[in-house]
Length: 187
Image 1 (tube, rainbow, N blue to C red):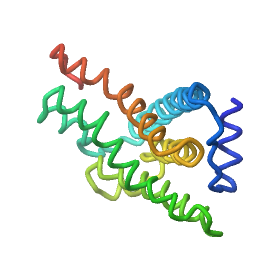
Image 2: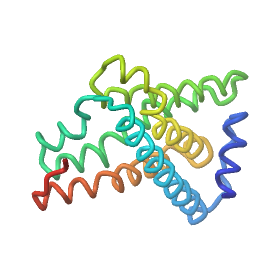
Image 3: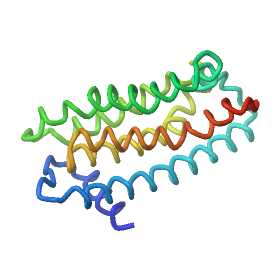
Image 4: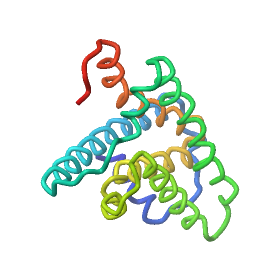
């Protein structure tokens, strides 16, 4: 819980103060703690979203992961989700934060990076009025993860945020890849 309080405090008033003096084992503990919280919060929000979508009898169309599971090998999916996407997304969304580290408007750049990261993940859904209506809920896990990744990027460095992102994606996609490997239907 202590790490969430630190992230919350940072999120309210983001500033670019890295923890250069922190040894790597402590950095790893911070990343693992945020990974655990990210998974718990992300899965919980996902379950609530699915419950709400079912309750409202909404059809959001096919999710991008379903298309990827149909069209790509397990190795390709793993490589894309756990190596390529985290590296590209972290470089694009959190890499540039360093350019604004001494600016009075850093917080707005930080918030913009979090919102853009979440917004890009709307592409996982087939665009419709229902998707746009539920957009804040649908990308809430990415919004929260974006805050965690931004915190890690600022405090620990870009490589640590790439690691956190890779681990997060790896944990979430591995069960789906196992189902595909074992030829179980996902739906």
